[in-house]
Length: 494
Image (cartoon, rainbow, N blue to C red; front, side, top):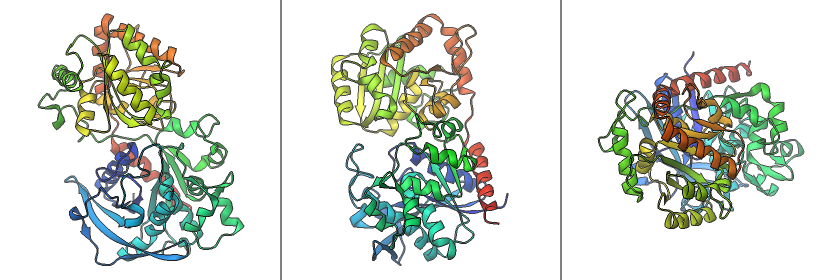
């Protein structure tokens, strides 16, 4: 296909800013599209923790009109490179809006009150940056609610200027986060309010950033085929299911890939030399021992180790797993010979409960926060990986787990359903354990099933591990899907 100029607009991208899988996807997809010959660039806010001294400063500041006045931002630049690809990364630097701890809020469960203004600045600044660079993209690829208004601004005003041949793509990584604010905050996106444009921005009496993007984007994608279907229904549509169903012809589910240069048991530098493959999996046991020691678990190769790496939010099934007096994990740890190594942060009540469980239970230990090295070790050293998600647009950890021969235990939803093949206890076929209903007693029964399989059907565990490690979820395949979407969007212009 014809090579394109593509600007990724996002609030996150590794290694600069990350709260979840969005950051991994933006960077990995950008690098893969660059490998395919496209001119790909990324625009991010310059958050407080991003060190200016490691970036190049553009001498010319950027003028952005927002809320009827002119704001000036600095522009910084760096690049992601991997030998085969180079992706310039630009940062909008505005001390008042972005020079603070946290990305969306000081805590994961509390957003900043001025987020509407902060991300309106990012969206309006997108077009000003392109003008300053004298680089008008063919594709504006926006990610989630923080960048969705770019699609709206393109349709409202910018397509009548330099961007007449530019198309917009909106990727929904998680419909549960929509950017909902007071309706008066629409003033940050435009200077004049009228009924036509208000109908695009307004939803149920409030300003809704994501809805504006869904209404305006040339094409919409989600991060797995099953999730694209699920969000058109009531249960997972978060009140936007009707609008998404209306735009179903423009909605495509493209399964995320993973970067096998980073998540690869044969080359992972975090494994302290205990690298392994499907043909030589023995060093995996050494990584398990490392995890048991580092987390404070009894060192025992015979006991199954279950890893959990998650945001501690309701979406991830934490109520059913960890809720005091009701969650399944206490009973599981009490009744079964199994260990849990947990890494995550999020809702305060859950962090507190996990700390207390860690003190009470010798076979459950937790690290509150995020630690990339520990995440790699948990993925590599665990025997199983538990993801009891209420909904999961794609999920990356279950794919990482497959690569390391760590068998996923997942609820059949979204990308989990698209990537994990359920265990057949008659034949030993499958790549993990899949369940459907999300209740504490179901989780208990599933873990009993897993433990029985571990202790009584070891040949099946070995067979599943080998099949899991043979799976391939490359970004090269995903990039082809996005290229097709770009082409379909451009057809709309002619």
